[in-house]
Image 1: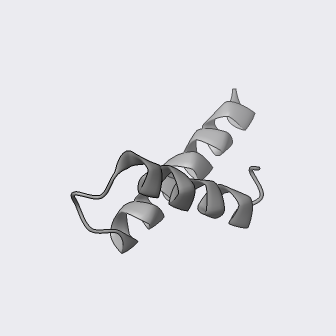
Image 2: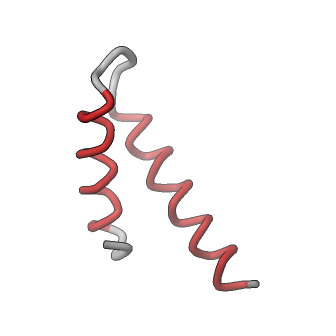
Length: 45
């Protein structure tokens, strides 16, 4: 259970980080690519 909570926390943190750097109205692919980079950065991909 604790592992899942830690993983969830890391994923949500990555999403928040991406959201804070990108403007609204971009294509989904822009968010997807940025989230992928962020997940790599935190060691999840």
